[in-house]
Image 1 (spheres, rainbow, N blue to C red):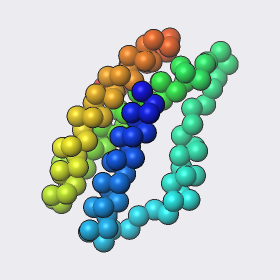
Image 2 (cartoon, rainbow, N blue to C red):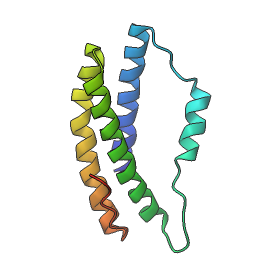
Image 3 (cartoon, one colour):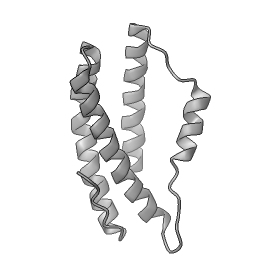
Image 4 (cartoon, rainbow, N blue to C red):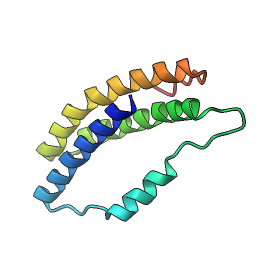
Length: 114
């Protein structure tokens, strides 16, 4: 699961970078992105396993990403952005289903908002 997530996010980021370059849009520096990524590591509470915390976080992140992609897709008039949304949303929705199944397996049972 984790390798699939990394591969899909890497591909989506490369696609976004190409769109940003084509449209001459600003891109955050790598250091800022790395700093943000470090803040996204799951916080373990007493009794939590890393697996349970990670899978619950994956559910939340996928829900947030789906909401953001839907919002941007509806608001954007840029064909490249709309195409990226159309390409990425089904993958995010599939990933959300898998994350929910894993969260349930690891005892969190987190089903989120969606």
